[in-house]
Image (cartoon, rainbow, N blue to C red; front, side):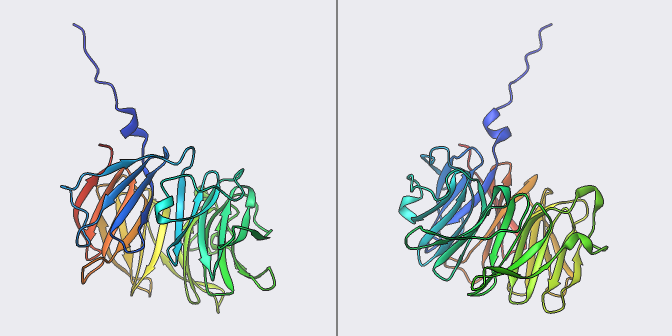
Length: 314
């Protein structure tokens, strides 16, 4: 007897969503995958509808978008071939890149300038109007996985070396730093010290990776609370009003209060979560979007209720 084995659909098996990019007025999304494919999606009344087909758009050639940041309708993109600056309508074309020989994994605006971190400890500041390189910040060993603006003069960076550094743009120096893996409560020896995600709110920093997710208060330079994700490694974390939301290589989205107390744990239909985004179009309550593996968007109403899933490999 001959048994026919149905071949695995390679595209759907190996594809995941890296990044969800919202248009300036949040009426459209670009869903960007690890295979450089992009899907343009309409948002109706703040909800992605399963009945609205996703429209596949041409990929930027050889350009994988890891993260983005928008300021005054100008987009900064951290990609596998440099940092790109463009308007919304140019995201689907090839806008050209700064430092095109380096992969960049995170990007943020600070004033009218852009900060971005990438391979080999690369951490740069770029003029957002001209694209001119202003400064290289030296200090990290290994990749810089995440950068976040703290205020108009300072920002936070972290990555493979496991050190969170707070930089002052005026002096171009590190004004403060801490190592989450040195806090015994957060340490997970088998997973190392690398940091995969962080977010900043005033004097508060939440970060995680090899160390468990932890909340830090910069004025005390100490860990304040452990946000235990079990065996999961967090890949994304966000401060939201009265809430910290984090997710990683598990199907759960975890919601904590700002005191570090777990509020609720929401199950998604994803195996792992790479990115989350909040959409506020035409709704009293924000809509939380989660993406990762497989390459679908999970839509959560009022942040804690999974409404439906929108597939993109069509």
